[in-house]
Image (cartoon, rainbow, N blue to C red; front, side, top):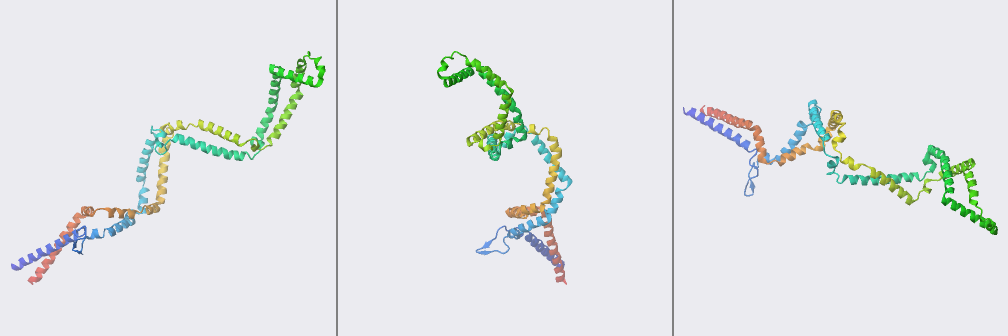
Length: 372
């Protein structure tokens, strides 16, 4: 009977030692969180294993995640999955449709990013147009007038010269019959008579030379030879004038006035304010279905394809292992302990009981040996 009691005592002692030992070993994985000292001497096994080697754990966990969990091939396979692609496409379609149907004005959308947009756009347009006009004029001034007009332009001007001559002749005839023209003609005749006839002019001063000369002048103006002569003269002068380069026709002042005039006229006609005050939907109403149903799916596929093709580079630049390492290192030790225990609580309890079982078996063997 004493032997049997001794065996049970040995079993109890072995089980207790085994269970407590495993329990303490599990606790020492996390505790104490900080090193403990007696005087200046650090107590062995403090802090616990995980707090002591947390940095190494974080580094190892980061490498493990990148090497075995978040691999480029796994991410690529997941993104190329039809179901995932469908979810992404549906989400983007919904967001794009909402954006395209927005009643917000273009001005309200870009104002936070580009304040005073209308003034800045018009100012930029003014500056850019002036620059372009100066460049154009710099090139134009090196060319001759006939090069600018071209053969069609030259022919067109030659064609309207007879019309110009006819208009000049008609206006000349009207002028000679006007009060001003008659006075000018009378002055010319009187001056001529005084210079050429001298004292004889006094004998003929009662003659109306104007009425005698004017009909003849009108006949000359109406003559075909006058018309053709003037047309030939103007054509000849035009041909000679067209050989001149543009820079001989423009000085700096005229050039600036030309640039200012064109720029002011063009910029003042730009409907920038009207365009900015229109709603997004007013621009997208007619293309909404095509954008959402055709362009968005195609765009999503293109982005996913391009992204997955560069997956290795993207993940390498993201430095996921460093992210994991930094996040694990930043965790409080007690919180890290709580996470591990919440995941492995049953396993740790089983290890504790296994220690007790093994200790009990060892106590049984020792007890039997002692009896023998």
